[in-house]
Structures are given as structure tokens and as C-alpha cells.
Image (tube, rainbow over all chains, first blue to last red; front, side, top):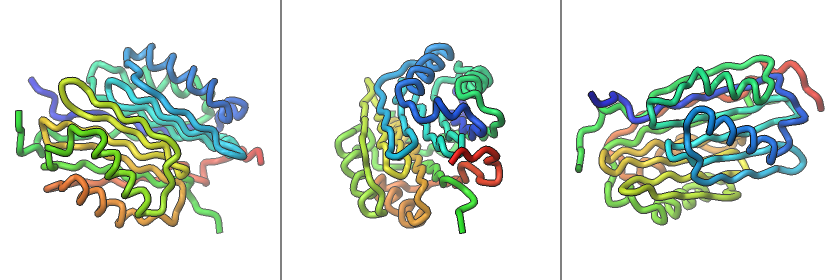
Length: 125
Length: 125
């Protein structure tokens, strides 16, 4: 049976994070790459950028879609997105790993379905 | 007055797109960069990747957060995300420009608020 959707998208709001971590792009990327391995995803390419005076943005293109992070160290807040088109990836495991990585005191998640197969009318292959 | 949120996030499902476009990372990036300029955002770095046999994933880190794209040419579908922390960017303009770029026959959008200021308890600056 085909999946009714093409991808899943986890959006995490991470509050009350460890703020020594949130302004360090190398530590953030290293931590995220470890989570990617742990959940069985595959990193293809990445870009991390530290803003002046403060804050980090990073994106990792995955074979399964993408992971992005934006941090506001001054607010101890990070916005994390995981978008995957492989239904085997465990989103509960991923969420727990991200919360632990950032030592988030609280978090909120949204999980969305991307690409409804029922809406695809013109298959060309 | 401070904004009650740190960022806005537009998620677009683009169906029935022009499929000659969806497998060409250079054309997609060029088109997206033009939209970025038009809406007054600033690209910092980008990564585009073409998958074999088909499909493109791309991310553009913005000064205002990010733009991502994933395409399924075989389904004439693309998943586009625009995340910005600059409240001056016009999301209606952005949405119309993206739909025109991909010649989407139909689309669905979700717009989410990211980083609720009311949930930020520990401001360190």
C-alpha cells in the first residue's frame, strides 16, 4: 500500500534551552548530526551561519528532506524543523533527542503532513 | 510594542506544477532567489541538491531565517517553506510569487507562529 502522504514535518519550539549552547554553530551542528545518525537519517550537505551579535541558523539537507535550526540565545529559544519522506523515522525518538540536546525546559510540537497523495492528480510516471 | 512572536512560517503544498521545472536545481534556485529579492529578504547561503533519478532539495539560509524546497517531479508536487523573523515581509506577496514560479495548478498553505514571546521566561539580555 502506498503512503497517503509524501512527507512528515515536525516543528519544535524549544524554550528555556541551555544558552551556552545556542550561540555555538559547531556544537549545534555536531549535536544535530548525531541525532540524524541515531534516527537513521542521512545528511547530504549542511550550512551553518552565526549571526552578529548573536544567534545561529543552520540547515542540513537530508536524503530524506531537511533539518533546520534557528536560535535566539538571548531568549533561550530555538526553532527546529525536521521534514522527512521516510516513514520509518521515529518522530518520538527524534523529538526526545532534540529536547535533550538543547536541554529544553519546555517545548511545543506541531506535526504536519506534507503532500497529500489524494491531491495529486497528474502522475507523469 | 514588541511582536508577540519571533517568527512566521509559511508552508506551501504546490500541486500540479510545471514538471519540466521541478527537476532542475539551477532554475529552481534562480527563481527562488528572485522571489527573495522581490519580497525584501536577504539570502546568506544556499545548498541545492538533485537526487537520482529524480527530485530536487534546496535550502537557502536567509538573514531572516530560511527558505526550503523539495520537489517530486513524478507527482508534479513541491513542498515549500518560508520561515522569517522580519514582520515586514509580505506573506501574501510571497505566496503568490511562489505559486506563479512553479505554475502550481492548486496549492494549500499553512501559516504558523514560531516562538511565542509569552512562553519565554528567562531572558538573559
